[in-house]
Each structure stands twice: as C-alpha cells, then as structure tokens.
Length: 237
Image (cartoon, rainbow, N blue to C red; front, side, top):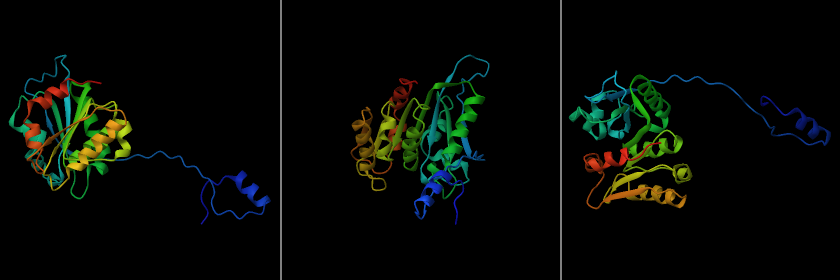
C-alpha cells in the first residue's frame, strides 16, 4: 500500500543511496463538519426577565451513568437538575444534558458544548460566570471538560469522579472543589485524591472535601449545601 502525500525529496535521496523506503513522511489537512444532537433540561430562574440588562450565571451539570438514555425525566433524579426542579427560583441558568445510552461524556463533549453555546446565545447569560459540575460519570466528565476548556469555565466541582493526571497542568489556574465519600465502593476516593494531588503538584490550588461516612452518594450532601453555590459565585473569569 502506498501512502498519500510522500515527501519526494526524501524518497529521491533514499533511492540515490540505494536505501529501501518503508515509511514516508506525510501531512494531511482536511476540514471536518460534525452534526451533533443532544437532549437537555434547561432551568431559567423565575426572576429572569429577557428585557432586563441583568446577566445570569450558568451551571452546566453532568449526570451519572444511571441517568443515561432517552428519558429526559431521569436526569431530574439527582444533582443540579433535581435542585432546579424543586426550586424554580434557583438563581442560575442551569443546563443538564442527557448522555445517550452506551455513551459517556468524553464521546459527547462536542454536543455538550454545542448545547452550552446554544443557551448562552439565546439567554442573558454571563460568560464570565459559567460553572461546571457533575457526579460519578459526570465527575469524570467535569475533570475532562475542565481540562479541555480551562478558559471556558470560571470554576469546577467534580463529585466522586476522576481524570487523567497528565491534564493537571491545564487546571492550575481554575478554582476546583472536589468531593468524595471515604467509603465509596464504586469510584474509590483515590480517584479524586490523585487528581487533586496532581493539580497541586502542577502549581494549582484545588480543594477536596471527603465525607467520612459516605459511600458513592457524596452528591446529595454537596448539592444541598448552599456553600457550594456561594463558592461558585466568588469566581469569575
């Protein structure tokens, strides 16, 4: 099989020396268009007035593996989507996408950001106060998206998740507050500890709250705590 775009100068030089060529240096450039679809819940606070000058902070919430599928009502079971369902005055514009069955947030990240962009363009949102959080599979997604787009989010709160320590250098300037249950037998505490330690070693200042008696559900106590939202609002880009 011959590869496209061989380096003719290298090929000619090797022929002159009598060298058999097994690999050739190539370069490819191509524009790719991608179509994405994603269901999501959108919470707009009761006080929102489209004609007012007020810009609202935004929370992007990534659910766990158990809420994947096509029934959007499942997303309301936990986390920010549950809080927003119970409190129409919740003072953030909240976006809670649903990951399709048999997928994950790494595979859906382009669709997630497209949904975020759609809402940001349609509503009076504050681009300097966009916050990211998620639980379990969504905790992994939070670490991933924060590292991929560190300039997009003002702060991140991953719950019982983990990530790649190799991304730590990308997170040194982002405020991060991680949460985990000490007795978690689904995602071990070491997953959060590894990421927090890696970001600290890279020069960042993340913090980690460990619930001594909590198993996998470390999100209910976290999302029910007003201090989380106060902490978010202290940070802007």
